[in-house]
Image (cartoon, rainbow, N blue to C red; front, side, top):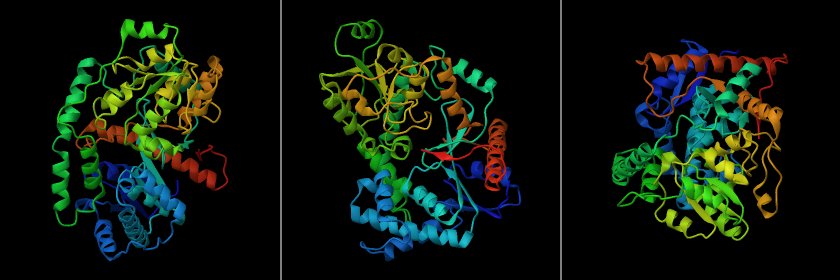
Length: 464
């Protein structure tokens, strides 16, 4: 593994010690760490200060330094802040941030950047501009496979390692069980109800709280505060939005009532990087309206079983559940029903990038997506327009199942990545999780470097 002199870290106040611990573990305790952030309290590269200054001196028609116009449009569309503000203001922010990041890269001259996976225009620009300079960008993200994480910039598949038959067998045994549910999902009706109240209660003061945070000098343009204020307003309501749906005998009855065939449509968290940046089908970015448009397009042809994400119950824009229920071919399903139960009674599963698609494909059910989710190879999924006609069955047999599982495992690495701000250097378990990640990242980088030097090591490449 080639050791850099300087590693640039993208950090936020709640993950500084975690990212520093990872970086020093991977590249050594003597490596120079340069910390960049839009949060002034942890920004050691003066990114935030440069950005505010560049913004104040910028003009609405200011030109970009290196981004093409098509790149600028894509960065703007995918960022949940830029796409929802005045386009002229969005352009000024984009130009100012590009100038500021260029100055940080000039000053720090890193060979590697360690970051979270891209989930804002700030990180998106870092990744693009690092790529222009040949700086390796390592974005980290948890996965739905227990004790594994991924390296990915914008959610793309990155083949990261070889896997053994034993690893495939173990993963298959875990995921094909009938009652499988990912660890990150709340598991009971009581937990779901508590989660709904928790989300509502936490959101009540957020519009005012973040508005006040932005009033502090230097914070007006802070991405995190600004976008949090906007999203909190979008989902603000005087009372939690309850969602009633069918389950049990009612679900079985509909599955055999002789009506139009059923498609399972699990709702994803939105806005979220898994849609904004991981989807090659940008129609999904306007998530709620795109779901409604899909249902209307296939009235009389298909019925859609729509189930809310258990962790997001009630956290939607006002009136979304009512608009869904008003669609005659929409069947609202209780969030307590497991995805596997719905997969078994539906003709197919339609997703953006949600992991319910992988669970369905592994069970031989046709999965429709135009977003190229990382867990499937080309040809494993059907395009959404397959709904215009009858479509073929999904993968068949153990051989295809193992191939699908091997593809997924080659794109993930051992190690648990806490991405919720709870990591603590004082917690031995947390340090152990980081140490496992360190070993995985070091092995991955060694393979990449060996490959770039012309040695036969492991195929490691981003793949759409």
